[in-house]
Image 1 (cartoon, rainbow, N blue to C red):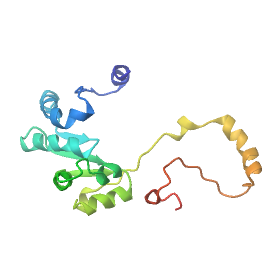
Image 2 (image 1 turned 90 degrees about the horizontal axis):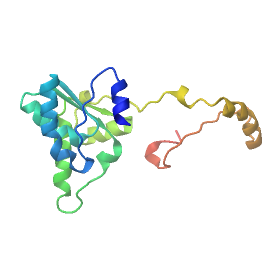
Image 3 (image 1 turned 180 degrees about the horizontal axis):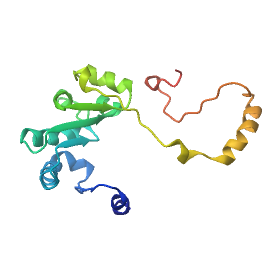
Length: 173
């Protein structure tokens, strides 16, 4: 269904057709072709490891700036445990320090970037967002007073969240 979604957008979408497992190694030729063909000057990657080939394109003069989204899990996870682990972490840090800007999804993730040596002026927290109207359910809203009464929560604040219950998520705050 991606083609229908892409066609409805007000800008061109070019899909490189690479599997996630091999993307780090195969995205550079596609990026170079697309950047030259569409005269792209700025690259925004969804993950740090895709920023590595974009940095090569920047070094080659094909693009001007490279930005990367940052997610806590990918900053905390070492994909190469064992003797290669330190090299993986060093590579991640090198890439994140080299991009023109990072966009972590939370202050916590921004702190992880700072711990990896990313300059604070290159960290721009942009929380994940949604369109609340998409999730409005009039029937559930009508049922809410009865649910609150049944649970003994009438007249007190009530917050619902969906998340893993781990301390770093800050659910208690």
